[in-house]
Amino acid sequence: MISKTHIENRARQKTNSYLINAIMTLKKTNVEVAKLLAMPKKKWPAVNLEYISRKVKDGERIFVPGKILSSGSLDKKLTLVSWNASDKARDKIKESKSEFIELTQELKNNPSLKGVRILD
Image (cartoon, rainbow, N blue to C red; front, side, top):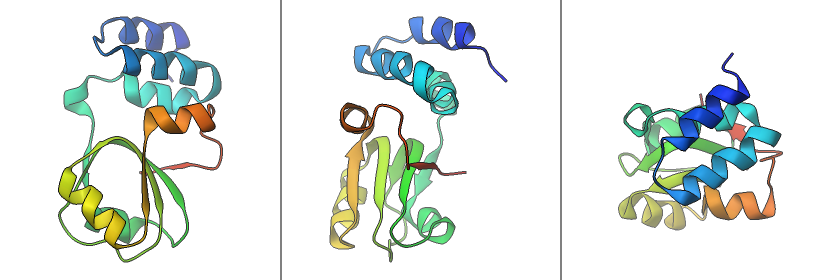
């Protein structure tokens, strides 16, 4: 388990102020997500819609700790929370009547990410 001090030290190395604020907020409320965001960006996963569709149930709220890519299709109605998604992935998410929410926006409404499952 990574300590909150270690998460804070990793956050200080980041240059994106929105990401730093997100990590600092989550460090207090959801350490697991803060740990994932504090990792170097090159270690963040890039997840395809096909993978998401296979791993989740209809109606879930899912956090993807990286970028959502457009390969495959989404056949379930979901709420996807992530730092970023490709333009094509956003289009496919809208077509499937699902919702994409950027992490910074979700933190304003739900600072602890309560009810949001981390995609494994």
